[in-house]
Length: 116
Image 1 (cartoon, helix red, strand yellow):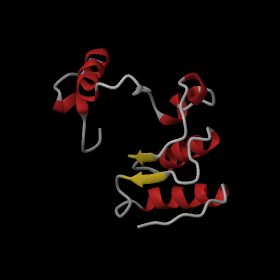
Image 2 (cartoon, helix red, strand yellow):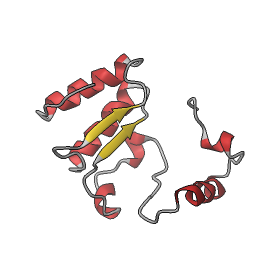
Image 3 (tube, helix red, strand yellow):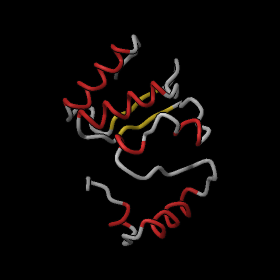
């Protein structure tokens, strides 16, 4: 577990009841949860099945190179990152792995951007 764990904060380790509690705070039918590791749950058809549209903002909380790379690659392959999409990282200054994965994927997709 990372520095923040909803199950610890809400004192509930049952996925179904934890999701219900989280939904009570969000209260938005457009929000969907995808359970699992990135490399298993971010399937090629996920964005189509969930009727996802291009993102205005993406916050990646991936501490490792592999998970950051997998998530970014999936976002680009699913056409969810478009011109104007902002990508944020929870640990940009502290994680060389996030920056490394970001640089590789951005370069691979020939994207130019600004960092700040």
